[in-house]
Image (cartoon, rainbow, N blue to C red):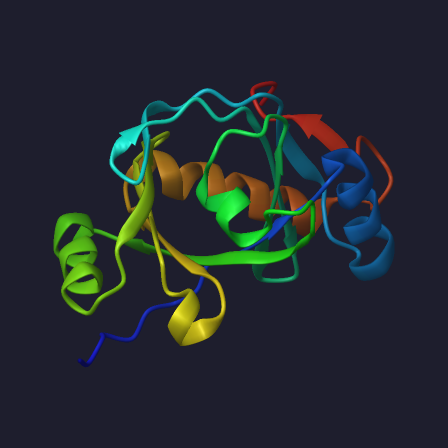
Length: 175
């Protein structure tokens, strides 16, 4: 199966302590500022096709041109995060790209044997395709739309003009 070329726009890491992880990324790579959504609420969250009530926090920031997402799951319900790190580990969880052909992309992965394990709606439709056998992590397909582009662009601009010290961790909804 041949896939189209896709630009990876995000590298996502599962962490035990999201605020400490933000500060480590800032210290080690000059990433940030990070925009934090504590106990994030998404619509229509399903895991393996069934409703899922995972309690997660997300932080988004940039390190140069790369978007870094940090994810902390606060409860022990089954999820794509717990699939990857069942015993409290940390590390790279998924890479993500934007697509305007969300349904077709999801179908392509599924036809190739990489099922969607987690789906949700946030600013757009999102599916975590289980590409662990191929690349060692999940692939997130994120529906491309103007709202997503504006939000990502704003975070990237704030990184470019950030002094590296002021408000390193910000409420995602404050902007």
